[in-house]
Length: 501
Image (cartoon, rainbow, N blue to C red; front, side, top):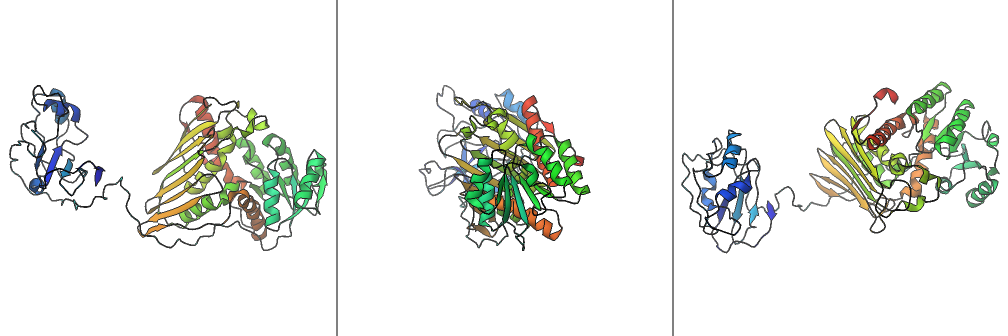
């Protein structure tokens, strides 16, 4: 397989270049072979390619005369683990690399080459044919870093659409008619859900949202108009964590189901206490992790769940966007705004892929050059879990060329999604059969919000826990908590044990 594609060798005769594998000091070995007085970069020795079948698989490397460093490196290993085999001919790329294919009996000394194809090399001794056949040397695309053409195949049909109950008449009350409420209400209206009341401490905001989306709903600035209201079975509480905690408690005690805005809590002990409170009162508590129903992320999750890519060995997310819109908002008061608020979507996505298996997190956060926002807009996290690794990279100060990429690698295939933003993504599934590129319908905003509420309504109807349950969300929050702490102390942090879930 081709490492580089230099000009083909002028001769039509094929030659093999033999050099030492990475375990040896190639620079010093080449220096030892430099011709006296030569000022140019040394060339590697070439021998006729007919000798390729005369490599031995069981030999010891010789000492290298004139170079103690290289000789010492040789002495640290009993056998050459691999060789680099480089073919040159008129119709082959100049550099072709095979790893762990053959081992070569090296002569005691090698003369510096006078030119490609003319090196004087002592005949190898006791040359036995390798018990491993060389790969097809004409296959230019067999090197692991060279893309291969994949056969287009039909994309598997997976259920990535937002879940919806059979009965959509259950009454919903929304508390908090601020900025993000438009996404909630627009999604609920689009999917035919029944919002009967909207509350905000600023009555005019509640009225404006009512007029926009649900003209027949009650608009009020009184919380008590919603809590214990017999016409309201579910409360969607969109306030910031500090403000919504007492309201979540009140709603649970009143026997109402709750959809909490994310991040669910900033203290895992408080989160676990609320989960247990909901259990005792026989109500469901879910979290608005709307990214779970972003079409591309949901499709990837369902593909993993269906076993289409085998065991997951890697999850990588890389996002470049401009998050400076938070200037002047309450979000700017959060120092680690990316890890503490934005990144919870991808910690939650990661948890939905690898489950409760993460062991350690190493994260950093910083401010970008030239940024005026007080919060740290740059962040990244490395997550280790048994048999795999994950990375989340967030460049929140990208003014030009926004990009959002997700890769999930498995033992049987790879899933990829990429696009210029959260709402425009192209997904591909790569397996031994070929590559599938399903055309997905919908967008994160606002289908993801419909999915978060829909999952809760389906759970109420079926009696099964919702996919976005608050208990399950504690797994995601443990990752987030570890990342924030890691960035604070500049060191890896162990993820809290499972009893916090």
